[in-house]
Length: 376
Image (cartoon, rainbow, N blue to C red; front, side, top):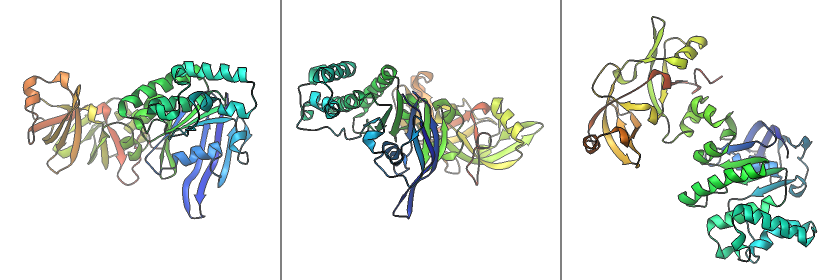
């Protein structure tokens, strides 16, 4: 088992393009950390520097207290699972899993014990005599994981291991990785562009953008306390709604005034604004789709809008609406809360009124995009 520490790590290509900027992170022993962000944000490059597959342009990488910048990948005591499985097509499943053990000249009886034990954990015992071409995508990924498991490495690295699988299989494999982590009880670093994977797998999430770390935190911290607009929109599906409005302080209370409505800020959000000494100003107001509700009728706290698209998702509707100034918003409405008549009325151009509670709002500076409460 091992901790991993990255100090001022950077990657520069051809002395011009900086792919990773001054990356600093302490990963504890047995922690499951997920690097997440859009394509090209530097997450895979960072993992490859940890693994030794990319040279480090600056800074240090430590594994278990030892600086590994100049160590070959084979000497770093890490195991890596790749996106494309990287199996030897001419070898059986058994031989693929056993390959690294045989390179170490491990006695064959110990190889057998390790391979069969890993196969049993992963549910691939019946496939040990098959070649990779006879396996499904999910089965091949289990083999790739098994090959890494038998190495008893200090750190497990997984680079978008589920991205080649279909949605149903991805969900299944995600659950299996959670179970695997519990059985192995080792340090995991996992790379993905899928925020659902990040939220469900990680003890902590590292959100990256353009080579920079935007925020590090637990899944609930990055969801409930996003430091900036990028994090707020990236985490959560559908993404957070943003509205240009004003924050107004009256009689010791705070209000927002989106699209002519007037809604009081309440709870911890009101207290946070007060503690920060925030006064009247123009802001970007953020509200998640699941926190917006349909109002029964027009009112001071209701925003009039028109329905543009109604997406039936089974247990909920995703309503795409637009306001008088053409601002597009998304509202998630549980179908169980609607009568059959209400569902039938959700057609293009239907007049709707929406509102939200004061405790679910997020407030962002228009210029810096920082969260006024959590963005320090």
